[in-house]
Amino acid sequence: MKTNTKRNLAKGFWPVLLLSAALSLPAAGVAAPSAHGKAHAADKANKNHQKQQKVQQFLETLKVGDRVITTGGIYGQVTRLGGSAARSGS
Image 1 (tube, one colour):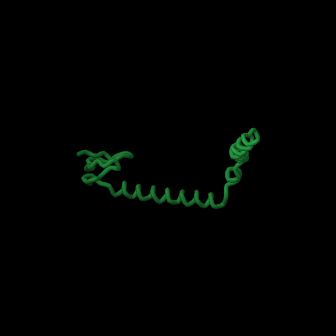
Image 2: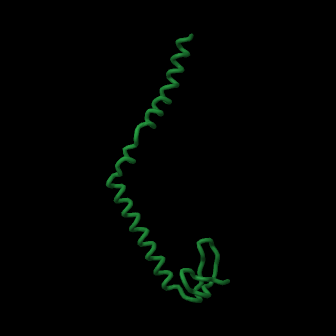
Image 3: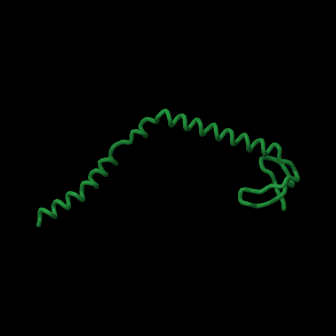
């Protein structure tokens, strides 16, 4: 009966041993980024640039009296423009 207990204990220990060995190895992706990662970063930077251009164009066309809805769902009307922020009143 003791041999069965030792075998069960050994079977239960293998996954823990393998997991600890796998976690102790350095990750290949961390050591050297792939070319795909660089392309993805460039694509993301391009999308951010396009988004900034759209926001800038929106702000340039905004004028007093325009009705707006904030991202929080608040309705308002632009009463004053100046500086880096648009002021709204209800």
